[in-house]
Amino acid sequence: MNWQWFHRLGSPRWFYEKTSRWSPWVGTLALITMAVGVMWGLGFAPEDSKQGNSYRIIFIHVPAAFLALAGYYVMAIAGAVGLIWRMKLSFMVMKCAAPIGAVLTFISLVTGAVWGKPTWGTWWVWDARITSMLILFFLYLGVIALQGAYQSRDLSNKSSAILSLVGMINIPIIYKSVDWWFTLHQPATLKFTGPSSIDPSMAYPLLIMIFGFYCLYAWLLMMWTRLEILEQEQKTNWVKELLLTGSIKNSA
Image 1 (cartoon, helix red, strand yellow):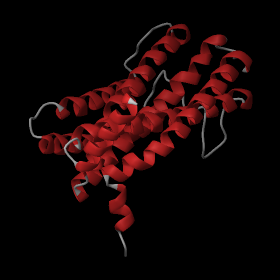
Image 2: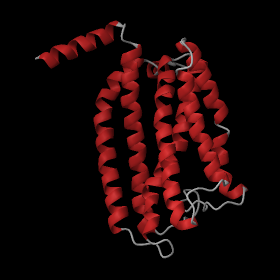
Image 3: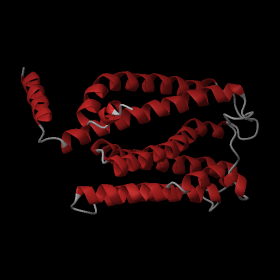
Image 4: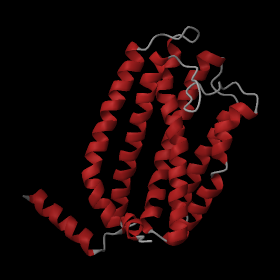
């Protein structure tokens, strides 16, 4: 089997050149879909019969929570690829995915607290879903901390990748926490493998927001990784030529 395509994916230069064409389209798509989702969800979706307008925070809370979990898979898989095939680009992606995932997890926790106050009467409860999401936040912070804990980049990458892989055990716990334990957190209302308990007039803008968040995540990860490539590959000839060409264009 010809694995040339796989090794090409691991080339920082190939990634940088390809994403220079992809990133504007992905960023534009993210902006459009999120604008549509926000206007539809906040302005046109009906008021909830029990929660009133406070439920509208789901259009931020749910997509952020989705991407916090999906982003951890991206980070862990990138770390695993780096450990197994020793690809520099994989470690770069892992490093850049950590702060993005941490921010998304923080947004999920904060918006969940804001939603919980009028719904439960309290900002915070130590139930299974919220506690496991807090652990996810600390796992992201742990990977970020390990990236700066060693002078050796190779050691930082290996330790971060190992922590990412060990922390994957927390992801299914988050998913199933509302089913395995008694919790104040409501079960999933939006289901892809069965009937959803959310009205279509609310589900459609929510799905658009989720798609928009995925596009935003992809755009942020591409742009952050591009900056990381320039930093780590600054001594290579192709980056020197790129920077020289860019400086000439800017001066012109």
